[in-house]
Image (tube, rainbow, N blue to C red; front, side):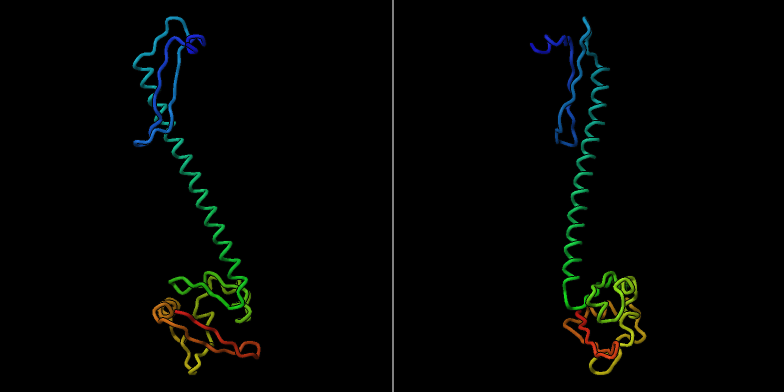
Length: 174
């Protein structure tokens, strides 16, 4: 009744579908006297509904991606804050043996700026350090091999070095 009062004489409805999920409907109406909805009108509306459904699905996917990116950024900020609050020096190293992150404590222990440690090779960062038994665990080893060796050997190893006249001990955990 309300459609007739609004002057609607014909109408067609098409679902907004993505797979088996119905996202909504789209409706079209004709209000001119004697107008009808034909097969072509229904096909055009169906095509429009398909495109609209894809647009809605893309908008949802984009919103989910933004939410995931925001959560990842938040977790990264929490991790960075945790690393910076630690008194122990921490170097994060990738499989290639490149330092990907260094906290202030590590930079202080190594008498370097944190930015100077990031993207440096592990062998460069640890050059000149010796193990408690006096051996040089870094000598002649590519960074990737050193990083792999640290991951493969369980437990903790200590490297001792003299930095600015003070003996420093670095614990390397595999």
